[in-house]
Length: 140
Image (tube, rainbow, N blue to C red):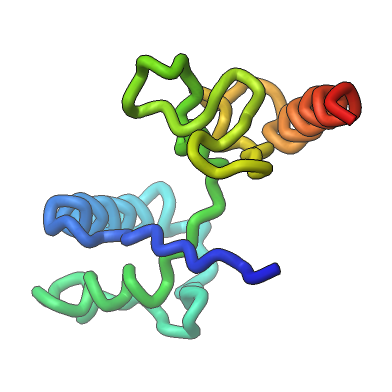
């Protein structure tokens, strides 16, 4: 009944942060271009209440701090629990979503999808859950 502690390790690699800073600065330039700036309403605080400003953009360290304080994942991660045959050493699940080496545990979420689907991921997860529920009912 204990919740897992998931560490996504955002920006642990220096190249990840460098790319985020480049993207932040590019976004800042676009936001201040004549065509966009004319319709812009002014600064929007980040999630942590910190407002992005020119001093932050020009700094060496402040952009990374801004990103760490304001970044939030809203994506739909998939493919983090590989499914495959027993011969695949990287596959943690069998074809019935059972976790190898842990009796009675299954993974039934978007992590079993090898790629992100074109449909709503929530609906796809519900379909996966319905399928696994059918397998579970058949085992009883």
